[in-house]
Length: 124
Image (tube, rainbow, N blue to C red; front, side, top):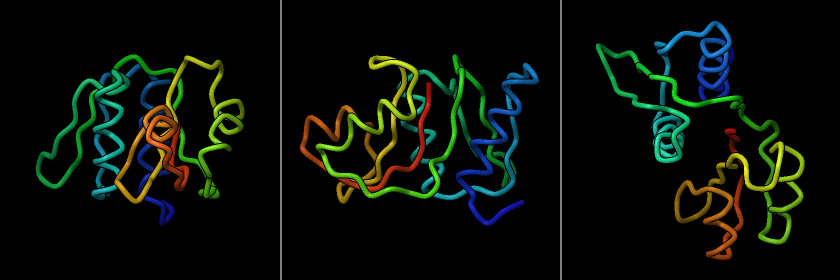
């Protein structure tokens, strides 16, 4: 176990997906991780998630890959396209999760609202 809760949780989710499990239980969680899972649920990568006895239970949806981005790059609006090309397999497939001053958003929302921020994770 490392000290990065988001990275550990996304790695556990990917390992469960590769093992064809339908759900995964995560002992360490944070508000940031819950916000990332909320975005993933809106896009269909996670079916459902919730707390049960201090454990986070995540039901996996249609997911090919998810990872935390390390180091967490600070990106401007003009640089979003560069990171989309780097981390996503195609232009309209997947999302980048960006932490802005207005909260966590996808790369599409950040581009539309002219936000920059810190690149946290990606899903596709």
